Amino acid sequence: MVKASIRTAIPMLSNADSNMNTNAPNIQQSNPIQLNRLLQLCSANLPVGGFSFSQGLEYAVEMGWLTSPETAASWININLEESIAQTDLAILQRLYQALSNNDFDAFNTWNEHLIACRESHELLLADLAMGKALVRLLRQLDSIDSAAYEPLLKVSEISFVSAFAVCAFLFKLDIVSAQSGYCWTYIDNQVAAATKLIPLGQTQAQNLLFELTENTQLIIDKSNQVVDDDIGTSLPHLAMASAWHETQYSRLFRS
Image (tube, one colour):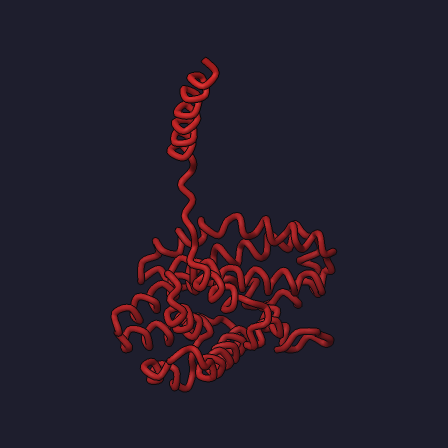
């Protein structure tokens, strides 16, 4: 009787395991190499000078516009939703599509459009300086062959967004990952600047990173719905803060 009970129980356990596996959530695994490449492209160690610029935030702190984690979150969120989504991410998607279609003319057109959207000399300087640094790095990476895209990289002025698109494409990242990574680089830069300038505590900064990244999917979705004629935006406070930062008496960040 005991042996019969054991024989009866074993199939029941097997069926239970089978049902558990059937009902288990479908977890999609990321490609480890692609994930590593994304982390590398978005790393604070990427030698492009991104953390030398505050994107107008230093002057905003000087004027008393930003005084707390809440005001910093509001400033960064507005820039993400009304500037990054409407311009940078929308054009990043078009740059990536141009690379996929091997359409260099379209790529150059969107690169020029992006540069024209920068509302102050400082924002333009930051964009071009970081773009030039990323191109220089890309050419020196032993594992990446960028020779076919040299006509795009040798232009006199290349936006950081354009250089970022080429890197993401050569790193074999999908467009949503590239857009998500770009959002992270901006958020990380701004929170790091706010931490030094307001200042914020380390735990406050980490909470701010969590809060700001919660909206990444919504921002990407918004950017991918922008039609060509609606690309570009104007944020007067950001433009003025960036322009006035050039003559700020004492500053930590580059102008």
